[in-house]
Length: 238
Image 1 (tube, rainbow, N blue to C red):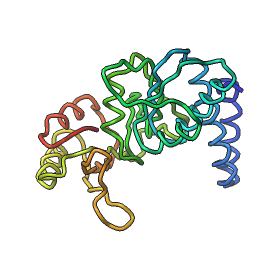
Image 2: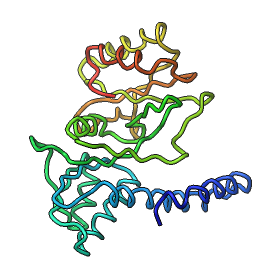
Image 3: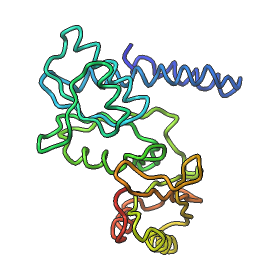
């Protein structure tokens, strides 16, 4: 069913899971909810003869499933997708959906999920993935972008926020130091270089490092902070 039909039920079920501590059921229902939203994004925004950009994550996976269903049934024809990561490309290959690289062509619509939504509706990407730069490049090419979130991604003013920033590996310690200098004038945060499970520095698909800025309070002026971070030499994307 369309996600809009399910929103009241989602809220009731979330409250039930919170009170009963039924974590497994909540995870299963969350996957179902994201499946509904991913499918509805395809139904609403994707037309035949379109170039469709795809981010990464569970919501995008279900959008790919819906694309495959509609291509098989003939509801959609002549669809070409552009993936921002290898995992998404493999899903497309598995479902026999044509996949191209990002080039001069304009992406008709991009479907992407957000990791976090702040009270001012600013969105944060890259908390759990290493495709920050790729997704931003594709967004710049897209005629329309559909960002899918559920209420598990919405942060209140009392919650801590982590902002991932992709930085060049060359001179990364210097870059981190410059970023930390912004804390005094913008917001209070610490910086932690992201490492993988083996303790080695995590490297993005573009060969960059990721530093996670961990805020002790909600970001008051997102626009000013973004502008300041962008001005630091060595910052690639965030």
